[in-house]
Amino acid sequence: MATLTTEDIDAVCGLVDELCGICWDESKAYLIESRLQKIVQQESCENYRDLVRKVRAEVAPGLKPQFIDAVTTNETLWFRDSSPFDALQFKLVPELIDSKAGTPFPKRLRIWSAACSTGQEVYSIGITLAETIPDYLNWDIQILGTDISPAAVEQASYGAYGKLEMTRGMKTDLLNKYFVEQGNQWRICDEIRSLCRFQECNLHKPFGHLGHFDVIFCRNVAIYFDDADRRSLFERAAEILAPNGWVIVGSSESLAQLGPQWHPQQHCRANCYHPNMPANNLVASR
Ligand SMILES: C[S@@+](CC[C@H](N)C(=O)[O-])C[C@H]1O[C@@H](n2cnc3c(N)ncnc32)[C@H](O)[C@@H]1O
Image 1 (cartoon, rainbow, N blue to C red):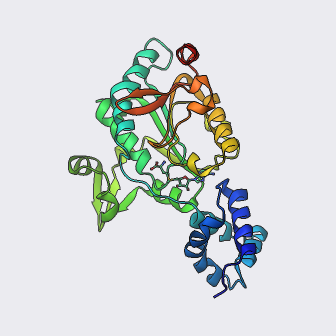
Image 2: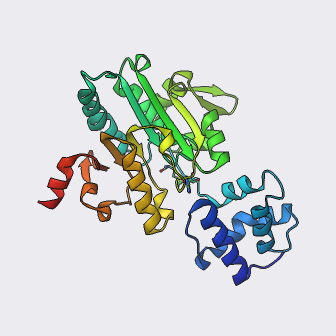
Image 3: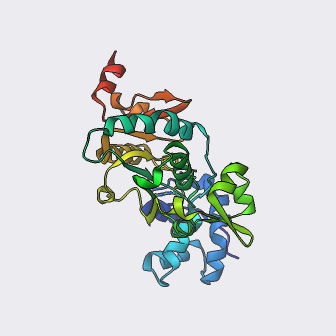
């Protein structure tokens, strides 16, 4: 097997940045080997630069998606960090419902999970809405899950999970209420699945066509981007956020450095952002 040289690392990091906007450097040599070695062998590449050349040239139809699947980190779990789902249930959804009363679409809710990985975040949102709104099936609710990884989107869309995945954050009562056992997997029930849509989306490309959203979950993905890309991502997200919409990021992430409209608000211990609310500028500049 070819050993990894500095030129290989530079070539792989360049392609990872080009395709996914993910910042890798020489400190990720172990990741390059562990994630790409199999594809290097499968494609009979002379070395990692040869793999980069083949992916760029798209010598085989599935090679680029396979490369993207391999370099992305799809770590996720049910109700990750719990507090964003508490904030959704006890603060964001009740406020959104109040603000929509008297509008032409009082029962419409649009939520985007912008890097949904294998779908746990999307279905956790769906279950939270079902637990919050008793007649949720009579509402016009759409939860859009997108991710750059085709394999992750495929699993998310199918909505079935093995025993190990189900032990990571899913409570037994919710498992029994919202999942159907199929062989050695649990599949999300039709009611929750019917609220959800999935598609591939690279957050570095324009996403205005996805529509407008009341809440955008963009968690644990911008940590892989450089500062300029992170700023661009959230500024573009604010453009497709409803005037009183919310952005939620990961527990270790902060958007405060992006400007006064990104003044964090703590609700149920979750950092929530209300970037399009004029009052935010006042709060931040006081
Ligand atoms: C660590 S997971 C986070 C999943 C979920 N949001 C959570 O917090 O549990 C990061 C996800 O970001 C996706 N990702 C990485 N780069 C991306 C990009 N440029 N556009 C869209 N998704 C991307 C990965 O494929 C991966 O599924």
